[in-house]
Every structure is written in structure tokens, then in C-alpha cells.
Image (cartoon, rainbow, N blue to C red; front, side, top):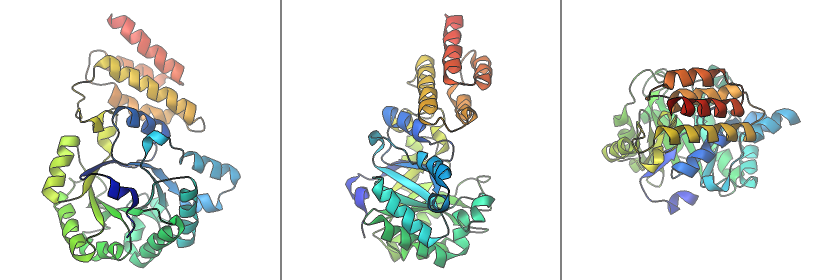
Length: 325
């Protein structure tokens, strides 16, 4: 098995989850600067679109695959139910210089599932295997990983995980909920531990990472120790906290308000510069997390929600600091 960059990292791994319209190139660059994780993922990108979309559509998809050298190791995440498209897209990932390829087999979005991708893969394990094997062929030596859940309507880990382990997938991230549960119930980390035991029996060369309800680095390390996983993937805890992996905690105890807002403005300017084709409204989902827990936060947040560009965001922050002296 080719585990590529994974074998050069120290365990346990703490990695950044791919989140659509969140972990874009701008935010990842900020995270890499202030609290870099062991591995970073792109947002998920449609392999079908990269193969079949007209030039303009393909250009937008390729923009989601932009990355900076500071982000390495950087993994490109794709979704598709078509092995041929996966193979072609894996070839593209290799040409673009990615360190690894990840396949999304857990997204519960109905439009993704209609394409026989995302969580729908759990209902068609033979297709899932074919897609993984196609990624390995197309990747030409890049390690291929999978992000999935413990089952579709019910816990099916004992039936589902061995199919993935029959391939040469180098790492598997287990979101410790079913597709039906979405994120409405607590993540069951005992199932991550069960995944580790299945892996040890079926394919001990593969790596298992756990995902779900991790609040900070300390919590991640605790869950890794308890489950026996090789690492953990952190997602929602990164909102408003690019310092997360610098081990300063979810509540940013060592980061003052001035620094939080300065970095928020930096993030906003990068978003506008790097992703001009995207709606500025996407950036606003970060402001609630950046702007909270201090006097005047609600009023400033209201101003930011009305802003239409990075200049207006910077001006609002300047006015805030002038008003508080």
C-alpha cells in the first residue's frame, strides 16, 4: 500500500475537515498561517463536473482546487459515482500537484446522492470499491483516502467498512453518525473504536481517523486516545478560530479581540482577492463566530452582515475600535 505523505507524519494526526463554502482557499491560507493542522483538505469538488462541464463551469470548479504551498500536505476531495470520471479527475489531481486524493462517501445532500455519490455510496459498495480503485489508478502513486459514515439508515459499519478495506485506500475518516442522523445526534466515538478493530482485523495497513463533535485540540487528543484511532478530523470548531490547531483552544483564551478582528479582516480581503467569482454573502457565515463574546459584538456583527465588500468590513472594524477607545 502506498500511504505517501501519511508515513512522514507523526501520530496522532490532527487534520482539517473539508466543508463546502467554508474551507475555501482563502480560509485555508489563513488557517495555515495561524494554526496549521497536519493535513488540509480542499472543499469537495464534482469529478463529473470536472470531466463534463463546459469550459466556464470547469474554470469555476478548478478555482475550488487552488491551494498555496503553505497548505501542504494538501488533499483534493472529490465526489462522483462514476469510476471513469474518478480516474480522469485523479489524473488531474496528480497534474495539479496535490499530495493526496480523498473521496467523499458520506455527504447526505440529496442532489449529491442523485448522482450516486456521497452517502449514496454506502448503498452500493461495489460501485464504491470501483471508484476507489479508479482513483488509485488515476492518481498514479498518490495516496487515496475516503471520508464516510458508519452507515446509511442504520449502523452498518461491520458490513460497509470491510468493502473499503479490501482496496488500497490509505486512510479512512469515520464520521461517527449515520446518514439518516445527519448531525442531529451526538457522534458515537465508540464506533470509531469499533472501526479501528475492524481495520486491525481486515487491513492493518490502513489508517483510521475519527470525526464528529470535537470542540478543540485537547478534546481531539482525548477522543483519539479513547478510540485508538490514528488521528482526528476537526470541522465546525474551526469557525472563527484559525488558531484552533495552534492548541490555544476553542475559546481563543490567548487571542485578544483586536487580533481576532484583524485576522477576520485579513480573511475577508483574501476571500475577495482569491474568490471573486463567489458571492460575498458566503463570507458572512464566519462573522458570527469571529464576532462574539465581547462588549459591542452584536452591534458590530449587525454592521458586518450589511457589508457588501472587504473595504466596508474593514471600515466597520475601524469604527468599532474608535468607538471603544
